[in-house]
Amino acid sequence: MAGEWAEVPLGDVITLQRGFDLPSQNRKSGTVPIVSSSGISDYHAEVGVKGPGVVTGRYGTIGQVFLIKEDYWPLNTTLWVKDFHGNDPHFASYLLRTIDFQSCSDKSSVPGVNRNDLHRIPVLLPPLAEQKAIAAVLGALDDKIELNRRMNATLEAMARALFQSWFVDFDPVRAKLDGRKPIGLDDTVVALFPDSFQDSPLGHIPKGWQVKTIEELAERVAMGPFGSDIKVSTFVPEGIPVVSGQHLRGTLLDDSEFNFVTLEHADRLKRSNVQRGDVIFTHAGSIGQVAYIPEASRYERYIVSQRQFYMRCNRALISPFYITSYFKTPEGKHRLLANTSSTGVPSISQPVTYLRQLKIVVPPPALLKVFDATVSQIHLKLADNDHQSRTLATLRDTLLPKLLSGELRVAV
Image 1 (cartoon, one colour):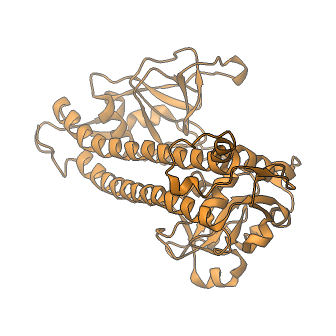
Image 2 (spheres, helix red, strand yellow; image 1 turned 180 degrees about the horizontal axis):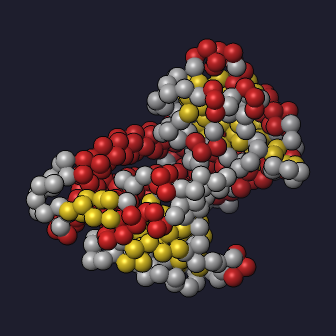
């Protein structure tokens, strides 16, 4: 290796230590992040380790590496860096991402990592100044990805707050009823809200608004395939992407990593095929998740997994923005989960039949158009940030092995 890089055992760079037990009944409310093998999972009042720190999974989820900048508590399912031996913690977190953890796994039903085996793995170690330079390059990409994530969280919160105010709390209607001008709305939008309420099957709703069932508003409500229709053995490197619960964490479909099935396989499961504009729900496992596939999504066609079902809106009557926003409110989520079975895996009983009969409040078309136009701009920004983050992540993952092997050198 050119320059001052040296090949040394990983144990000469960092010393890994098993995390600490902390049963849920012993946790105290606080701000100290509790780090599990899959990342920050809770918070505690006591510090286990002074930050900054680096943590990876010991059991369960292995191979993921987390840089924790503040004081933290590593759980016993993790390995944390007890000693950096004078090396840069940020660099160490990237170095660990290049390690083949599977080579140190005991291959049991619950994967586990032997830290002594990890310590023996040979790695290339640059001088401290170059460590910091490498970490700065990769860290700038990660910082931008994190900034986009926080920005999207803020944008989603804004869209949800707008929906809650207009269509659940009816704030503009209440303001007009009290003789006040609704805050933050121009006269054109204010004029679209009535100044009184009427009785309905869902209680008092704004005058002139309607109550409709999902079945009246949908072109289709359908289930994903049966479990035997999609298995790990049916996945292929490229094809039709399969949507699962991990893609439904936000308002928009997380359009990143997918498993795929062949076009022929997807054609055989026509009822489970979804497209841009469809709203997808989880009916088993992590129930209550809901997101929609935006027009800016990467693929024209997807297939939902066996734990998902979906609604295709009649766009002349309602929009996926509105439906998704409603079922993300506390009221909407409560109603969606009201038919939950607690036997075995948590699930929504007869999800398609149940969703079809649910009633929701539908505002006039002119107001829906204003809401859709407002929220669509937010969602375009969400999608743009997601696309940028995927591009940055690809660049980071391309640079990482080249920088850590010395193939690319950073000026210091």
